[in-house]
Image 1 (cartoon, rainbow over the protein chains, first blue to last red):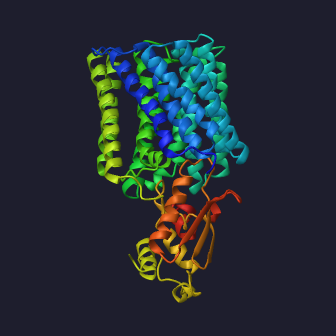
Image 2 (image 1 turned 90 degrees about the horizontal axis):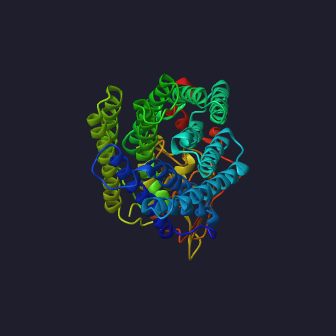
Image 3 (image 1 turned 60 degrees about the horizontal axis):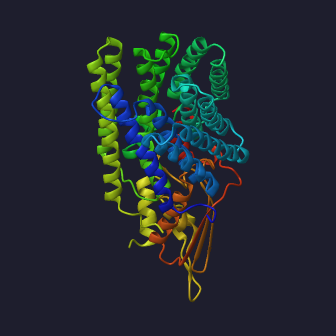
Amino acid sequence: MPHDISPPWRVPLLVLAFASLAVGTAAGLSRLGWPITAPAASHGPLMIAAFFGTVIALERAVAIGARWAYLGPLASGLGGIALATGIGGGYALSLAAVGSLVLFAATLSIFARQRALFTFTLTLGALAWFVASLLRIDGREAWQVAPWWIGFLVLTIAGERLELSRFLPPSPLAQRVFAAILAWIVVSLIATAFAPEPATTSFGAALVVLALWLLRQDIARRTVHERGLTRFIAVALLAGYFWLALGGAAIVAAGGLAPGSPSYDAALHMILVGFVFSMVFGHAPIIFPAVLRVQVPYSPLFYLPLATLHASLVVRIVGDYLGDFAMRSAGGMGNAVALALFVLVTVSAVVRGGRTRIS
Amino acid sequence: MAKPRSFGDRLRSLFGGGEPSAAESDAKPVDTGDDVIVPESWVRDALRKVLDPEVGIDIVELGLVYAIETSPGRVRVDMTMTTPSCPSGPQLRDEAAYAIKVALPEAREIDVRLVWDPPWTPDKMSAAAKKRLGWGGS
């Protein structure tokens, strides 16, 4: 495509994203008491805006193949560097806002081309990130915008899964239920401005219902009976839906997201580690070839980081609810080890696959 | 290098698609002197090697291949994705071109285009793909 950028030019954008992932993970570990020097206060923005935001914006830019769309991942990626180096939180906020605005515009262009419930859902997801970015510029703390950040990631994934569910189309009733859940999520997010606790609780309940909808409608239920990569993706998704439901339930049980409470750490990480990262692990073997045009041949080793992720998350969550800080820290370190294993296994698969012979 | 005919038959047997149809088994390349026109069915068979990794089914069965045109030494394919929001489009397009190049060395010029009109709809899938994905409540 003449207006696209060639795969080698996309590499620096991914490097920015993974640098934020590394520093963001280190920041998370320092919060859990591990003797690591890292910008602990920037853990959330580094993981959500600088890592997830950048990879999602990059994926969307590749999909539409337009140069301007790459400004999104460039901006949010540079925002991550500003946070990681401590150069300036102000720059980071502005860069995240630019990144989310470009992602929103790119997604809107897809919606204009294909008006469907799933493209609308993706658009709402991008908009949720933009709203979160504006709220951050307006001075809200990370914990205050957490529902919007979760909304960004959950709606993005739900939109993509709704698209794939067309391989086994949901009934008209099921589609109406999805639209109702979408409305529920959006209304809850808006209401967080007026009544944070009840609105966040309502948001948590909507996430539980969404997880149940996805568990019932996703083609992963079928493709889990296939083999190789197809099965691996399905396993990662189904495990993720389980955590999404539990995370939503944890928000409901706690009556919101109170920062510093055990349920805050538990709910956020059930959703963001158990659901979102599981989805990332599952789709990396598809997304890396799409973005970088390298081959990522499937290997049963892919299950190693996935199993580590879920097992260590169980330890962390049990530690949260038992009030056992050492257990929670150990689980958090397990999460970090899972991320390191994921990078290692993916890079070794790329090396094994060699550069694609496809010109 | 596999011979085109046996390549297609092997793919068919791998996919469980049964015996080639009478028309397909009769298909032969047309030698026009300098170049050869490969049968459309051979191109289609080559494209069966390109799988959508998410569902493990090939792009022909998923109804993503819209048109195949063959002329002396040339193959042109119009294919689509289920949505323009899918980032795998350019990669699957290149995989399709590579699959044709490997299976049909007679084709000197291969042009695979991504098209979005008409948009893909689930009814474009083959009966076998629908069955495998659980249509009809199976």
